[in-house]
Length: 214
Image (cartoon, rainbow, N blue to C red; front, side, top):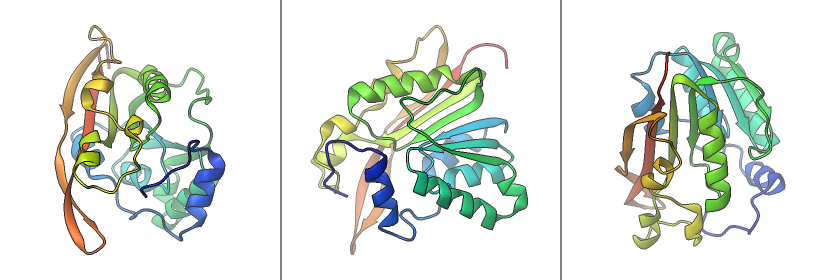
């Protein structure tokens, strides 16, 4: 999708999800799998969970997951996919439709907070990611993944909105070094298919561990 309205609100995302029976592949994000596979399962918050592929993958690997997304259509679809995956999986995941910038989780803290490709303008993004960091329990992990801004220069079909994209250092700068250990701050390349040809795209990946007792 290379053109976006100025405001990406609930109505926009609900319409986007209604435009297709399945908007995404149904597979977990590759960076989630590579960065989380070595972690001990616990409680997880999947932010911007979409149709639920990441949350369902986490549940299959022993995590107890709360999936949250702005789109109520996406949440309904995610719950259906979890049910289709079986009672054991569905029983490990709860779902919630909410505005991430206004959502109040109360005192709940998570062993893993993951946000995959949640793209907001830089001011809103910084507020959101700082709040997500606060939701990580001591000893827990924050995983942030997004599209790298270099994609805009390399012919990758992205919305012409540079403010939506970020480099790993942008996320690391939000984390107090006295409270966090950075495990990953990288921009890995991967191959993706667009139309009838392949292209190389880059992600911004930050995995950080909150210091303190587990």
